Amino acid sequence: MKLTLRIWRQAGPADSGRMVAYEVPDANPDMSFLELLDVLNERLTLEGDDPVTFDHDCREGICGACGVVINGQAHGPRERTTTCQLHMREFSDGDVIDVEPWRSVAFGVVKDLMVDRSGLDRIIRAGGYVSVNTGSAPEAHATPVPKPIADTAFDNATCIGCGACVAACPNGSAMLFTSAKVTHLNSLPQGAPERSERVLNLVEAMDAEGFGGCTNTGECTNACPKGIPLDSIATLNREYLRASLGRK
Image 1 (cartoon, rainbow, N blue to C red):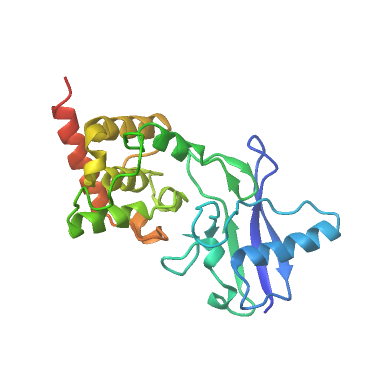
Image 2: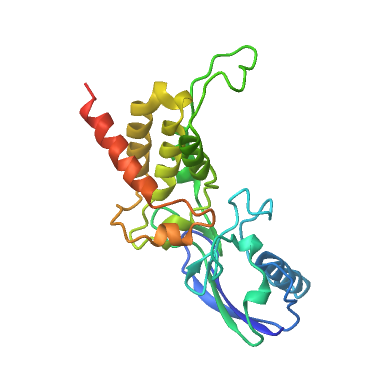
């Protein structure tokens, strides 16, 4: 396959960026998108040019490190797929592909396609945990959890914190990410001790990071590679109202 990549190049946070076109004449349809960038970077390095900077780690759709906007879509055209799991067979020979970083005020560009997503880490740090007693492990069935509740918790626990929801949202909102953490932990009996404190702290941290407000456009859940449901945002709003009314 012969492809043309138009990639956002930006030397640093204070610099102006621009789209730069690169020809990739030997793309294999079975390559992942990140492997395509690897091939391009190998050539750029051999030619003495600066390789394209991008985030990656596990390359198995687990860590949430990868993530770029491909032809205007977070993670690219295939639903429920991270950038590292997107293969070039989704494209056609001769295609021109635009590759950009996540676009959000809260996600500053570090270099090229790499952005600073540490704001999501700080949201989790504000209350994404449960209290546990130290000592021997409890019996697995000591605390029964009804299956519908367990399913809801598990569905939200699949969030990998990649930030696609923020990049896809026209407001740059992190509500889907934050609601996944709240719904996951607040659904379970283990999360009950911090239930109210958790949602208040997470929302406060989210607002402090400069993420936008949610207007229920739904682009977040469409872009989410793990399919976190939009219902989770409604759960967050209910939990926040409950906690606010109970605040002394």
